Image (cartoon, rainbow, N blue to C red; front, side):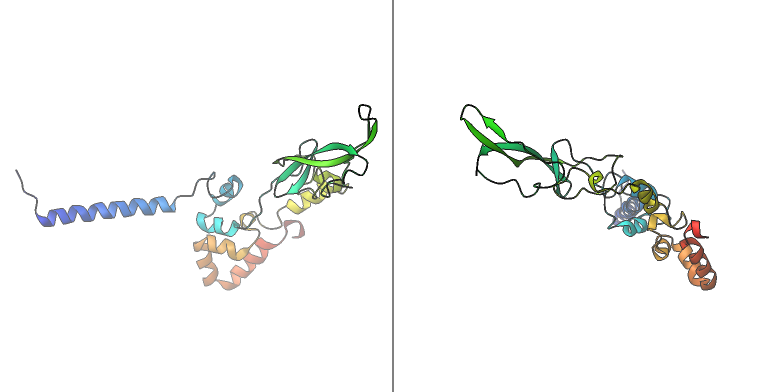
Length: 217
């Protein structure tokens, strides 16, 4: 039986530590899962960047679209939530409409005559259970106003054209993932940043070219 020396044990331990460190570095360099820290859209955009993590950092703060239309008989209450609206019939002088929806959208409650009590009852708007807001291609991609049903209720006639213009890239395709920010693009692409630092005049021309609206060139 061959005896291992203390030096052999130390060498083996050193190799193990190096291998573990290498695997950790490789894992850290891999893009995070799209279903984890970032949205699928940003994940796809940043896969094209030389520095994936730098691209993700540049995209932080981009608001996520939550929805623009509440389910039937629901009103928007904020934070991506809608609340059911219903009518409650009470005797005359029995209360007031829920302020959040009173006088908004098409919310109305008709009066009702209760034959059993032989009295005229007033219909009052009330709020019930809360649900998540929904998305619809038929309305502008913005949240409804509080107390209203959808963003369609305040949409301009040409809202589709307005939205298309707002969403149209106003710079070179390479800068789109960085919201047309030249510096953010450089930070995510170290090689290009080094080239720009070494060639400031050429880099400035490239910056102007890439940040100019394609329709105005």
